[in-house]
Image 1 (cartoon, one colour):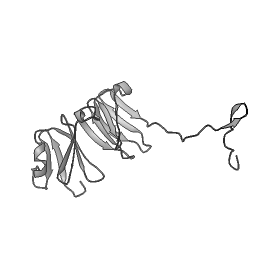
Image 2 (tube, helix red, strand yellow):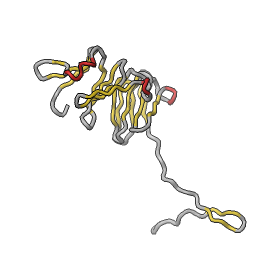
Image 3 (cartoon, one colour):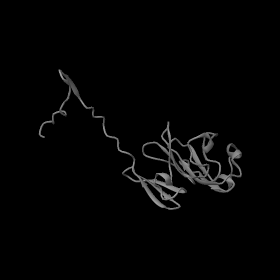
Image 4 (cartoon, helix red, strand yellow):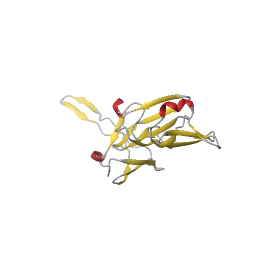
Length: 174
């Protein structure tokens, strides 16, 4: 991490190294006997633990938040990776698809939505903002929907009803 601490996820939880030995910090004692697949450091310094059967765990300043499928949002408690994208959304690679949390809403993509497999192993983002997922069935690219600016249809009332107005005049030089 930023402080130079090495963290290791194992089948017995997460451990920290001081350069001489590995140990579990006391504030993580509650997280024993869980398999940690991946550790992600978030922009705010929080540590996300992707676990095999216990969902995604966010730990920061001695506080632990557990995000489970039963709480709503996550496709499954089998989380392989947590990834924050360039638009600040969190993506969770699970064994039942990939779940996305934008701070308000949850969305899940799975084989039903076009992924080649439901077991999503890893997530990456291209410089163009496309999301890439490796799955048990192959690699998938997800392009975010492009939103077009609102362009209202303008009408004016006439004696016989209404008439559609022409689009806005073109700017100079067109």
